[in-house]
Structures are given as structure tokens and as C-alpha cells.
Amino acid sequence: MTKIGLKISGGLLLRLSIASGIMFVACGQDDSVESQNLASTPTELQMITSNASGIQNNAFEFRGMFDGVKSFFGTDIAAKHNTILDTIADGFQNRTVGDFISQNEFDQFSKLINTNEGGLTNKNGNAIGTARPYDTLSSLTVLELLKTYIGFSSIDKAFRTTGANRYSITFPGKVETFFQRRLTTNTSVERWINNIYTHWDTVKEAAEKDWKREGKTNTDANETMADSLFSLFVFDIAQIKLLREKSIISNANDIRNRFYKGALGDGKKKAKTLASIYKTADIVCVQETSQALVDEMTKRTGFLSLGSSDFVLASSFKPGGSAIFLRKSIFSNTQKLPLINSQLDAAEVVLVTATASNQKYLIASAHSDSKGKNSSDILQEIDTQTVKNRIIVGHDANTKKADNVSTYLEKAQQLGLAPAFDTDSKEPVTSFKTRTFVQTQITKAEKEDTKRSDYILTKGLQVGTNDMIKKPGPSDDNPSDHAILQIAFSK
Image (cartoon, rainbow, N blue to C red; front, side, top):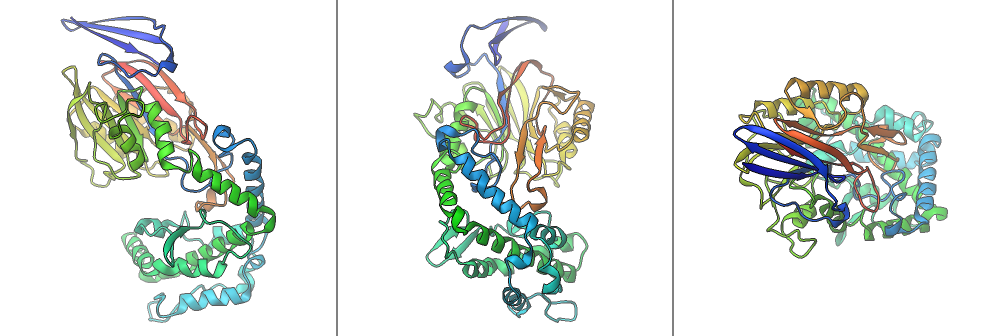
């Protein structure tokens, strides 16, 4: 007879005995306290899923970023933060393009786009820039301009597809980032805007490839790029001019300095905080993983007993992609599986098989696209694999609304994948945030984004209880804007 004891978050102990194919289950209370945070013994099986990203390298990306992190940043930072964001929101929503950009600056932009070096030409070979006259554009609010002429759902889309991050512009001697630089009343709009075009050829080439794949012509790409880059031009100038006003410079610099010294802005500190939570599980499925987190979970010795002898990275890893960590004392024969559907991103959808107690498991960590459109394809990919039983899935499905949640859960259940949490509503909410205008997804700015996005699915397993062990942050104990979910399970 084999006996397995499962400690479930909250103190419930699930004891499982298997003899001659017959399963006996007994439940009782475990008097141990969760704060002991002891590592699981080999007879326990616990799993965590977590999107580890949340806060990017930007102290002004979200509203409320500092509400729950007083111990890192102090009690005054939240009020300062809101004052700055109110100023910027008012500038984008109520002030016009003409308040920030003069006719002369507009002419300089058009000249730059229309030069031979810019390379924007129509089918006749004539140079094209923005075809919109200044007197029309200048009367629009900044937000109206961005929504009308942006051409992208996110204004840095082309830059991100090439790896040429528009916020990392090369200045003489070093690379600086706009949100990292100290602001002064002399912060140079001109130097900043001119350096944006450092990556012009790379961006143009990437945009043309994107539009060709969508069946559009180079002329379409060029014209849209011209409009989009003008919007980018306005976006950056408005931010710089708003943030260099004397009334907010000192507060903005204070926030930035504290941010990069705290657990949100320091990737290593953030990784330590998350690793200290993940260490309670035997299986950890992570989305938007950082190199610092991989190092913390697998390489370092002496930090909360999380050395190389405890966890192994069971999958290949690409920064920003998905990853699976397994406790080495429990799992063996680990193998990463190739994806059958070539349209899925192998960095975002990671599948492995591993053996524990002579039983083979299929484990998946997956991150859907930003609109959740490929979530069904991801579930189908899992179902297509040869392992049909003992399946464990951690998935950030990016389900935005209740009907998206219902569709996702229906698909999962059709494939025999059982959700570990409520199946009848969009609860539990696992992510909520309000983006600001100091980030590139302008159409989402100043809108509350509350959703159930994160899921644990199982097949052929007996799940004990589930727990949201950390609510969505950022907070002192969870620097991510996603909840951390945990289950205890057995076959």
C-alpha cells in the first residue's frame, strides 16, 4: 500500500492511500502554521501558477502602484503619484496638440519624415509624410489625435516587434531611458525626439513585413507609419513638457528614485519576493518570467533554501516567456515537448512531462495573446499531446470579460480539463489595474481593467482545495498585478 499525505493551503490535510487500485481518502486538520513556510516533503504535491511580470520598468505605468507598498516606499508616495498622474491625464484628455507642438516643430517633423533618409515613399516613388495639416491637427486634444491616427493598438508595436525599444534610446556614451532620467526644466525635447529615429530603418522594415503578411501594400505601411510616428512624436513631447513643469519635477524625481530602489523597480528584489512564495510548492508554472527569477529559483544557494538542489527549470526559457519549475527531490525524467501547432509561440506555451512516484504527468505553463484569442488553440494543443491523464495546467488566458471566461471554461471542460476554481462566474478576479497615459496602450488609459485571467486546470487528478494565496498587487508581499493561485492535488 502506498500512502500520500497532501497538505493543502489553509491547514486542511488530504491523506491518500492506494492499494490494489482502490483509493481511500481521509481529510483532517493539519495544525502546522502556514508562516512556517517549510518545503514540501516528497509525499506532498502542491502547485502554483503566477504571472510574474505585472509592473514593468516604469514608475508611472499604473494607478495605485504604491498604495499597498508602504514599507518599501513610505506613506507619502501614493499622494504624490496620483497628483502627477492627474496632471498628465488632464493634459492628454483636455489640452490640444497645439498646446504642446508649434507650427515650427510640426514642420521639422514633416521635413524629417519626408527626407530620403526617412524612406517613406508612395508607389510613384514620391516622399510622403503626414498628410494632415497642422491647423486641423492642432485643434484636436492629444487623446483624440492618438485614437484617430495611431494606426497601432499600441504605439510602440513596431518597435517592440524588432526589439528596438523606443524607451531605450542611445545617447552619447550610454543608454538612457526616459522614465529613468532625472527631469529638469531643461529636459531636451529636441534631443529626445531626434533620437527616437535612431531605429527608423529597422522599424520601417518590420512594419512592412507585418503589413505584407496581412496582405497590405508598402504604401499602406508607409502611410500608416507616417501617421503613427507623428502620434508618437506628439505623445512623447506632451509627456516631456507636462513632466518638466516645476510644480511636479521634484515629486516625479522622488518617485522615480524610490521606485528603482524598491521591490517593484529592482528586478532582483522582485524575484526574491516571488521566489519566497513559490518555494512552498512542488510545481510552479510562471508566465512572463524574468532571468532574475530563474536565477533565484534554480541557481542561488543560501536564499530561503532555494538552491540548485531544490528546484530545476523543467523547460527552456526565454525572458518574458513562460516557465515551469519542479522540485528535484520529487520529479524525474523531465522532458520538454515540442508544440504540434506551429502557430503557437513556443516561448509562451511550454509543455513538459515529468515522473513522480512512478506516475507520468503532463505539465503546461501558458500565456495567451493580449486579447486571449489563442486560448482555445492552447487548450487544444494540450489535449493533442500523447499524455491524456494526470495533466496540470497553469494558464494566463487573458480573458477580459465574463463571456470570455465562459467560452474558455466551456472549451476546457469539453476537453476534460477541470478548473480548480469557480466555474459559474468570472470569479475569482485575478488581475486588476488602471493604466495611465504614461505607457503605450493609450486606448486603455484611465480605464479600470478588472478580470479573471489566471487559471489552474487539471485532468485525471483529485484536487483537494484551492487558494488564492496572494491577491493581485502590487503590494509588499506580491509585486505582480496578478494573483498567485495554489492547489493541492493527487491522482
